[in-house]
Length: 359
Image 1 (cartoon, rainbow, N blue to C red):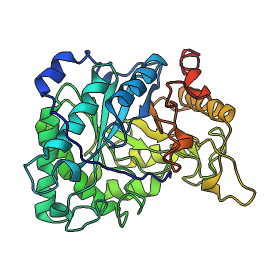
Image 2: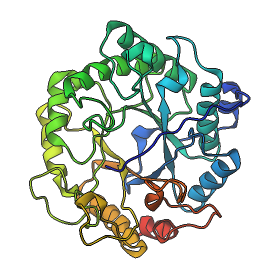
Image 3: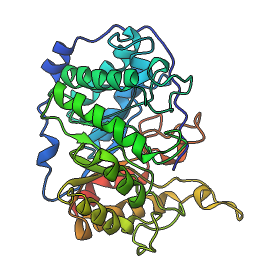
Image 4: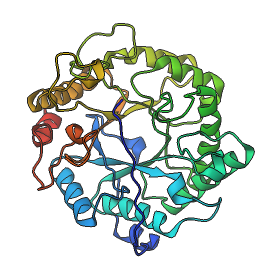
């Protein structure tokens, strides 16, 4: 999976009133009513990150919308929202989240919000990627999930809980039993806050059917409305059309995931790719599989191949989210994944998106 450095920079922001947010938002179709043509195309939008200005946020969102993007995935840190105790929002943290969601929604971009990163009072650690296991922490998780779902009812299109919990880099220990327990509390909270908003299983890196199966067996079954995966190719410059080789490293390993879902009674649920993509960068002769890059032409070709593959073979996949939003030379770990340049111009993959979706 792609390394992503989360940098939260506190700054003074006037909190946006939710009433105003709801009044200005364009009416959005619910996630449960996706087009049969599919898939709906989205992009990861790091709108709560401190290295964004409002002008940059607006430019990126306007550019995505103009090029056929219909939804954005916004990552939100629980630690940023409730750093000190349960039930008390940080004013600046809440303003960041309000602002990112409002700016997306008022442009008609459906916000999928990913809640993750636990505060110290909830997980007992200075490391925000340590999961929550204590009664106090789990109670707090249910509480914030409920409050957020109620606050953004009718605005947030879906809630995703955690990011890549099968990867120790994103959830320490990567224990499917621990994730299942947290998901139970998060799901209960989201549904108590607004029962109509779908809850998305936290997308694991790659098509990790084995890990998902363990989570479902441990209690995650029925505690989500939409399954999610991040079907990056294990060798980063390979085409998504390669046949399944029996491992999670291929997009075409999806039938194994569907089989696991069916085993636990969840076979009829939609699947979203809440991340996928290819990084543009030169490939050294001795590059590891995850260090390999593609050309811009290959990136555009592989995006088109993904849409074609989903349409022809995987109708249960109703949304796909490209990682990520900006081509940012100040963030070397992520720059090759982005779609929008600082001047508002776009990479070929985004420039050709409308044509691909219409094909």
